[in-house]
Amino acid sequence: MNRAGATSTNLDEHSGECVSGDARAVRSKRTLSTSKDGRGARRAGKRPLWLLGLLAPASALLPSQLVLWTGMPIFWWSGVMVFFVIIPLIDVVAGEDGDNPSDDDIEEMQDDRFYRWCTYLFLPVQFLTLLVACWMWAFGTLAVVDKIGLAVTIGLVAGTGINAAHELGHRIEEHERWLAKVALAQTFYGHFYVEHNKGHHVRVATPRDPASARVGENLFVFLPRSVLGGLRSAWSLEMQRLDRRGIRRWSIRNNLLHTSLMSAGLFGVLALVFGPGILPYLLVQAAVGFLLLETINYVEHYGLLREKNERGRYVRCSPRHSWNSDRLCTNIFLYHLQRHSDHHANPGKRYQTLRSHDEAPQLPAGYATMVLLALVPPLWRKVMDRRVLAHYDGDITRANILPRRRKQVLARFGEPDTANRTTRTPGRDAVGRRRQAPRTRISSTR
Image (tube, rainbow, N blue to C red; front, side, top):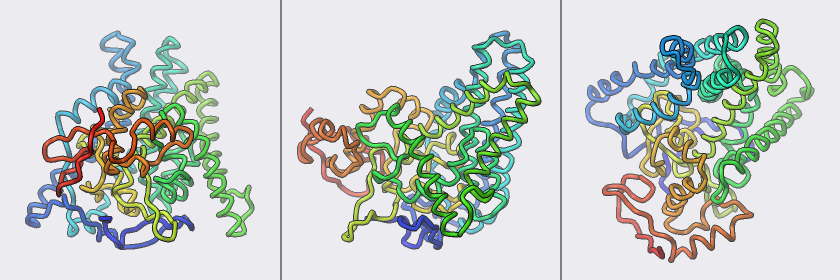
């Protein structure tokens, strides 16, 4: 299997600890490698765009102004319009990113503190919008439906805040890890700090991972499994860590305890300042935030399964085990989260150095569009199941299949040599990857 660098930083499947390595060794066939001056010009051209990522949390300040100037209360729901209409349209116009940093650029970019401040500044904007929303819920003249709309808008911002926490939580710097916990406080989802790093990255693309969706599993079945399974896993992992270090389980050094206290403290202070009437809307925005995160989890690993080696252990994660989407606009707003394949293969890399890989299966659209597709299970299956099938060369038995739906899935796709053929676009294979060499064409029964 073509790997993205044998010495890349990764996680050991059994210990759950980071394995240090040289992230610069990651190689991509799509690396832009003309002259050094050319690389620098491209990097400089994209570098200031990362500040636009602050528009995501700032968009929650729009509703009050739009309603004020237009008199149309529909704009309390403007977050839905921004995240699921405007951003996908910009993705279509802007097209693919395609800007992969070269090996020579990565070390310089890793050390450039500008990129870190782009994530640090997300947090004050995020919490400013929360304070404005609390004032509107408490003292504004909004109808209940308008307050719910504002809560949904704030929740979408909180969901992108979890993404900022995701980036910060992967770092070794202590202050960045604490900022990750702060970003998670708004959604009461502090266990993500433990489960994502020590659980998800170890078990990703295996049946043991609650955040890896399976073929035959629709979003509404996946969500409770992922939310509850992730919480149980986080508690188990944290108890094991504390026991190994001889620390009392209910010590303040328990990550799950103090992240929960941070959330409870935040909600309590806000209720004290603005009144308990805001609590239902705080809960709505928190639920929207973490459900957005889990829906994106559903998109990122649907149906993908790591192979086992001769010892019966799952191989280490490579770009083949995560869905990739290289749309420029969403890349900027989500700090390259869509380059998820490289992130899982090399979790120690900062967001600005992530690259797109040809071996990674490609989503047909950006995350916002894929979230909308996931909300309609028949449409999702029509779009994605054939891509999973093509990724495994027509052999659906190599995919991660929901156990109780296995017979139905196998009956639907048949034996590997009679699997459904998928439509290929010129220059790309059936899962959207750039075609590098002739592949075995999948026969059709349709």
